[in-house]
Length: 456
Image 1 (cartoon, rainbow, N blue to C red):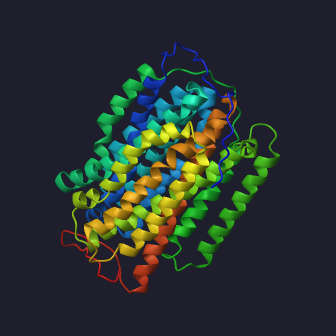
Image 2 (cartoon, one colour):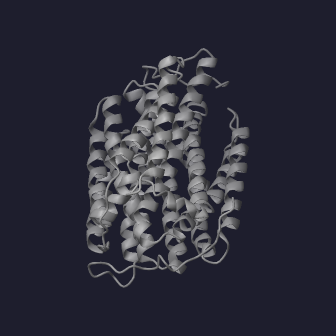
Image 3 (cartoon, rainbow, N blue to C red):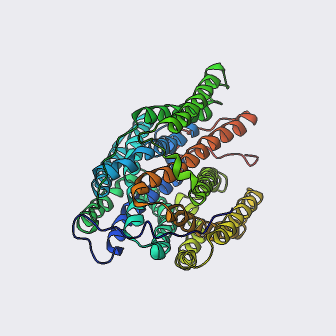
């Protein structure tokens, strides 16, 4: 992946409206707490998938919708939530999102139906959508260019810690207290994160923005129809209605792109940001990485628990090599990002990740040893540590402050779109392979999810 290393001082540190701490690190740490909670919540759910299937008498596709609904509600509004931060204040929108995410977590834990859980997860996704672009925009506007790689390294390390803490914590909670507690655990973290953000996150200058509501409607409807059509296609035997949904979704996305090109006011997606090769290639890169990692997590956790017979905690421990290596490598990768051309680091990261996924697919057999699984997962951790922070730092490197919010929203939206499509695609593949063997996948009614036969 060719990532241009051009640097500019146009987006150096911008003064806050209120008195900003001399060091932006305290603000970053406060923001990282909320970002950590979002990531932990995503990784926790994959570990709890079999338990949710059993307790709520759901199907595999139903439970994948628990994540797909979250990712969809997360991805679509990102195009406008970055603009909301520019208009009403990055700090204000971040705090609103954190509050919504925390309250929705309580609703997730209290629900007693799969439909209620999916609805609550939609509101969780909206909260995450409000939080994420503000985090990246604040980094862009408070850290000078030559220190931004280190800041993004902390952001990347947070993802590594979440990969480690999320599955293990989720496994322990599911084994000991029940799947509901994977959501209840967000309450104290959310309250602490809110208090610290109020204290340390600066109030940065705002910009008077118009909102492209037509763009919001076109992108939201188009993305929903595409994802729903892809994920539910097999359930409806790919009938005419499903193909109509997918076709209309594609048409709406094409109309959306055309509208963004002709809208001369303030389009939802400023196409001028894509004239910067750094930003364009970084957006494509992070979308492919999100697709791969999201699509990998569901079948792997189902394999670990339903084929190998591991408990949620034991299954989560298989992820430790990936998470530990990602955490340990994040600081040196961050320093290298400020010194070495990012295409070298990111290129090596993508190559390592691709090799790791092919390797893992080849060893995921019923009788595979733990070591055989941990080795490719460790390589995936090495690869991911070389992708997330260098690509994020490169995307933001040339953006001027006036486009920080919009650029952050577009970048994070492309990342989440990759995750949404990955989630939908893996749902289709799982359903198709189970149906190919003339079997079903549902709760057994005997206290656990039915064990999958070896050929699956």
